[in-house]
Image (tube, rainbow, N blue to C red; front, side, top):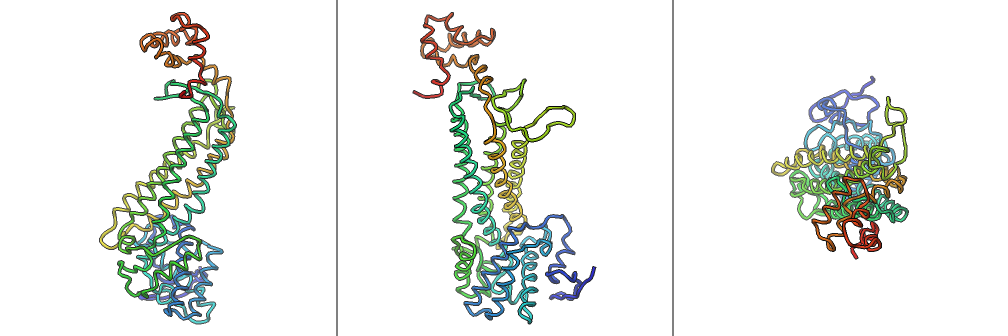
Length: 456
């Protein structure tokens, strides 16, 4: 591989000739070889937005010469339009402040700006002017998460809720056996089942919406420890205004930089909201799997779309692959939450030192949940068919229907009828007709499954 010589404050280093990064990034590549994981595109783009806004603010404040700032802005826009992750190869498992990733972006932009301007643009003195890794990386965590939630996850959540509403309009009238403890219980309508799922998702959306205002209050301006050393007094507000204009979010400077730099409590809170959604998706996925079970020896209340062969040895077997996949990604998000919780505890004095790990896991969770909502909506919920004959067959023989007779004949007598109905595999109505003095018409009224789904 052809190389060129670059240098930093520690000396000279060979760098691939075609690489846009410089010496400090190459040192990170050499030092951090713990995994093949790198920070995702959304995170790198957040740092690029930060550098663009910082250059614009510094130009207006007289910190950077306009032509240097313009070259940095042009370089950032170029990279945002075509973010080639080959230029951002630093391992997630690096220095806990994310300094290597900050310098990686600084160096790429400095290289491009230098070529454009025809004179040196320095990665530290110019691209990183008025900044520190210690405020850039926390800001990137918050910005990338806020953008991903706003642009990806909330739309996906609203989509699956809309699909549930449409599905409820189609099949909501069907009455099925309710279940508690996985055992037969009082009947419910599909609109109640689907409505419960929709309410879970609406609650998760509300929790996520509550995260956005705090995520949009940024660390940028606190620099190394929160005091704002080496930063223009108006930088934080000017930067937030430029970044808001660039991203479309309403961003502002934090009212306490020490909080944003020394802790990752916002990330922990956000991850908790993501975990809540993951739990909801897992519950919905497992309900779909149970209702689809069979088709002969299970519940067989619904039939999910047949998407692919389910077995390499059993011909004709079809599995509920989308709910299974969504349940797995939900488990991953729950695991990510544990990682973020542990990372959040690593705020030692004025800096959290697990920042790249927090950013990686947060963005992975948001992406997984966004995709999970869409796939579950489009390939499972919208497509399943209700097996009404099988549902009606089991519903008529459900001994628990006798619960409706409790106020009329008493619990003990009702229990006796339920046990006999189950033992003899006969409808409750037939047994009750034999064991009580109630007329058939009255029993049909009391034991009507559809009526029992309404608290009238």
